Image 1: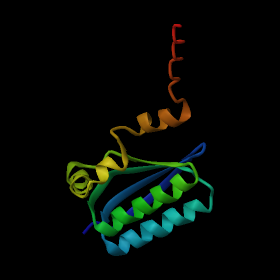
Image 2 (image 1 turned 90 degrees about the vertical axis):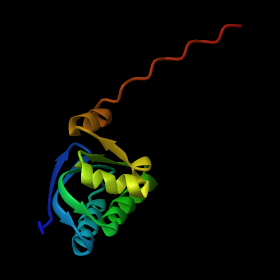
Image 3 (image 1 turned 180 degrees about the vertical axis):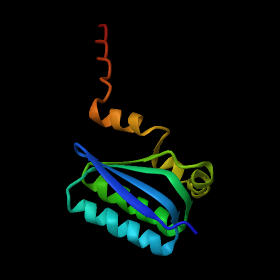
Image 4 (image 1 turned 60 degrees about the horizontal axis):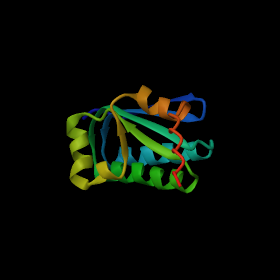
Length: 127
């Protein structure tokens, strides 16, 4: 079993959380505690990099959902990046792939926050 390791980097208002290893029940509690401690730092934008995660249990999924629920209540967002196919399959099986936002590259997720694309102005309706 690969021990879970959590690293974090702050880029402006975004907290990037890189997780590696396996997320079993005990590790999920540590992840939950870590994410809750981040709330105290007033981060509303979380990017969770899952590339190095080999396994995630239901408690790990719950920790991510709790983060999403908390950040949504504060007009924030959670984005997940690069889960491997085995981990992504868990999200698909549970239907969470339709609730959570996934990105292939961290840079894409960050760019959407840092410089969101301007929406084209609507054309005035003709009378």
